[in-house]
Length: 219
Image 1 (cartoon, one colour):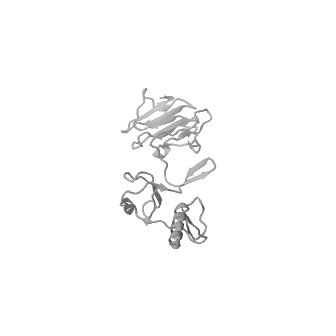
Image 2 (cartoon, helix red, strand yellow; image 1 turned 45 degrees about the horizontal axis):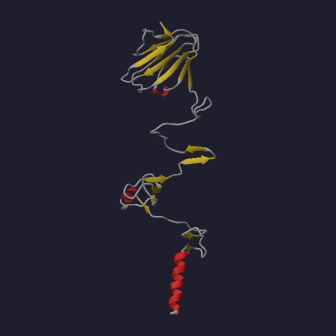
Image 3 (cartoon, helix red, strand yellow; image 1 turned 60 degrees about the vertical axis):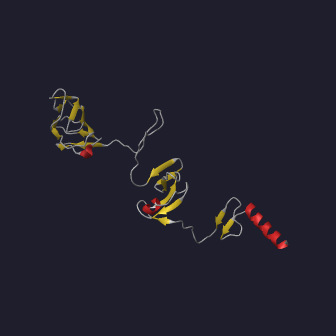
């Protein structure tokens, strides 16, 4: 009888203060399970993406290590009925209040929000200016650039077909030489040249090789 009471007492005590330690005899009071080691780690289940997809009713918070595709730790941030596997990645680097992305692209499906003031800015987008002094042919690499002609004599800028839809660049006649635009393009007045020194002309591709060339122009 006394032995039975001791067993019951030990059982009740273990239920009230149940903590399990692996590698330690004194697990932390706040932990249900504490694993202590100075020379080994914890290895969780490893599987392919397909095998992860076969887990039946994965619990919210379930963690696995995926060994193919984009390799890494994945946690189910959804529900058992509608799993949503989120990769716990290390691509983002945080330093103070700054974050940076180490590889790949950053895409947005919504809006990019920022400060609404005259001092707000997006860094890393420096002005890209190309200087020319002789005849020049526009390429897709000129998209978004400012092309300044420093030539003292007349030159020709050729606008080819096949530029990407939405292509745009700005041409500035900085030198005394007038710039003539060659190619098939649209212009409200039929002008083909810059008006004079310091003229600014825009080139805009609207799709289907409809290219608009407009600004401070003349013949």
